[in-house]
Image 1 (spheres, rainbow, N blue to C red):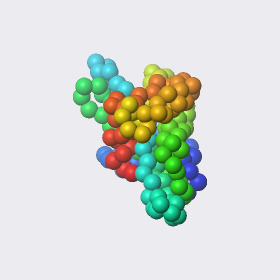
Image 2: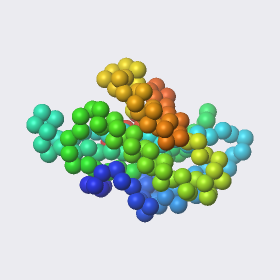
Image 3: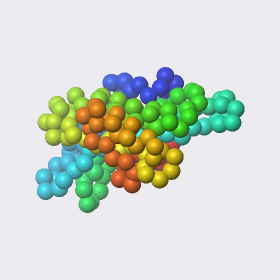
Length: 174
């Protein structure tokens, strides 16, 4: 884990339930091999989720565990995913926590784009960013803002209940 925040390096490793810890290039090659079935349709998804630990009342000894997941989904069949986790030592109110998650997903997308263009011939450049906000609950007021952030960076945004890359996959590891 990284105490500096959600800044991912080019030498980061990703975790996979089936492959263990792998580098970005190995993960991209594995995704490339996974999408070899030309009869199927695929979605490439990036989503983040986080959990605040420590004392919310005193705001002391707080840290945010932020998980970002990269998912390749063979629509109607199965999928595979990779994830990475960072630790940010400070308190985050809900709104700022959602911004951190969205920014982490956007940064991961930016880190992966050169590999996607090179190794997958750009066919998954229009990936989806899954955001952990929805029409119910306290995050509903933020939907326009974070969807705008994602769209402004050239990606498609999905929110709950369609944002499983964030609320289901990334959430498993916070």
